Length: 304
Image (cartoon, rainbow, N blue to C red; front, side, top):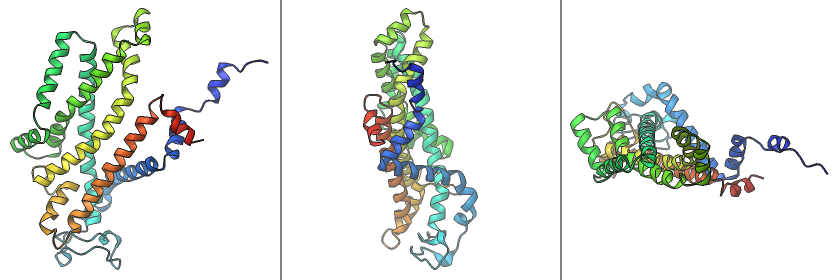
C-alpha cells in the first residue's frame, strides 16, 4: 500500500496560528483572560476619544457619589470621585496611560536586555563579564528606589517613568537570554549549522533566537504585570504620573483619604489592576505551555 507523501501530510497539518486558536479555546481561563485583555486594549485605544470630556468634567453636586445608582447614566454606575467626576469613565480613560507605560517599559527592557544577553552569550569572556557586571550594578539597587530618585530629579512624566521602569527590568531579560544562549549553543543543530559554514550572525538570529523567544515571551507577559504594579505604586506615592494625566495608580492615591466614607474611589481602580494582572498571569501560564513543543500536546488534546 502506498504511503502518503510528505506534501499531503504537511497539507493536512493546520497552520500554527489556527492550532494556537484552538488551544486557546480549549483553556477557558486563558480564553477569559485574553478576552479581558483585548477589551482593555480597546479601552486604551478608544477610551480618551470616547469619554475624555466626561472623565474630566467636574460636578461638585455629585462629590463622592455612591455607586450602583442605576437611575443615572451608565458611566455613573461606579460612583464619582471627590470632584464629581464619574469613576467608570475615568477608569476607561486611565487605561491608556497605564497600559502605555507598562507596554513601553516592557518593550524597551526586553529588546535591550535580549540584545545584550545574546551578545554576552556568544562574545568573549571579557565582553561577557563587562555586560554581566553592568546587570549586577543595576540589580544591586532596589528598582523602586532608583525610580524614586530619578523621577525626583528629572520630574514625573510618562516618558521618564517609562524609561526608569525599563532600565530596572533590563537585567531580567539579559540574564535569562544569556543563560539560554549558553545552553542552546552547545546543541547538535547549532553545531551542525556551524560545521556547514553558517555565519555567527545567522546562527544567533536564525537558530538560537527562535528557541529563546518562547521563554522571553512568557517572561515579558509576567513582567508586564510587574511593571504595571510598579507604576501604580509610584503613582500612589505621588511621584508617578501627575494630574491632569491619570492612571489607575493615581486614582487609588487620590481616593486613599476617603477610604472610610467613600471606599469606591480606590476600590474600582484597584479592582482593574487586580483583574488585569491576574489575566496577564493566566495568559502567561497558557503561553508557556502553548509555545513549548514538549508540553503543547496537553492543550492540543483538550482542543480535539
